[in-house]
Image 1 (cartoon, one colour):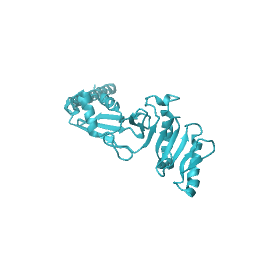
Image 2 (cartoon, rainbow, N blue to C red):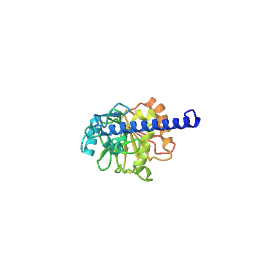
Image 3 (tube, helix red, strand yellow):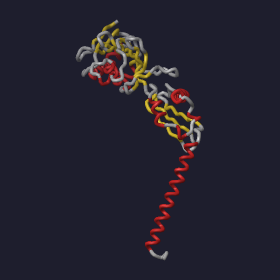
Image 4 (cartoon, rainbow, N blue to C red):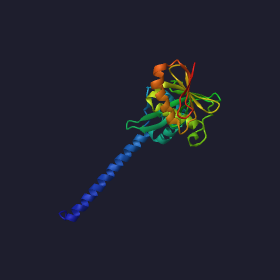
Length: 261
């Protein structure tokens, strides 16, 4: 009877199904046991900024979670920890751009935090101070570190989250000007401050010398303005020196108008 090919095939199928069912049961049991285990440790990794700085550290992350959950994660059963909620809580923090949370096989919580990257420190016309990151988000000043960025002062309106979608919000051209400067190593090394005057024109302050660059409005001629300025710095400044001029004016099409001291 057992030499019948169909019977052998049926027995193999039964054995395979039984083995698969047993494996599933073992896995399910292991998962259930894992959920019942108490979290033994919370391991936090905060990805530092380009210069190695931390705007938020691992202790801040742990405290943030404790405030939200009312208790340390280490005291909870693994099955009660909502990983998605932990990620959402962390990503609501203004210093955090992205958070990834996982529970390991040995019942540890592993948390990876990507910080926001400040590109501009703003002192607006109401006196508020904060950073703007490379996504345009507002980032508060950190108790751990003062990021070395361009500084913007003067007639700057308060930050609004949707400013990049607003046609006439002054923060939008300020953000675009900042990125243009940072994308060019020459300008990034040269300028330290952007001032916005009462006519909503930009004035650039170099790190070297005490002259200012009157840039004017951020418009379709912006790239040409920088081109003219670079030619002037490479040719005119090399002959005259950094201390000859009080101001360099780029507002006139095709010209660089300088005022001597």
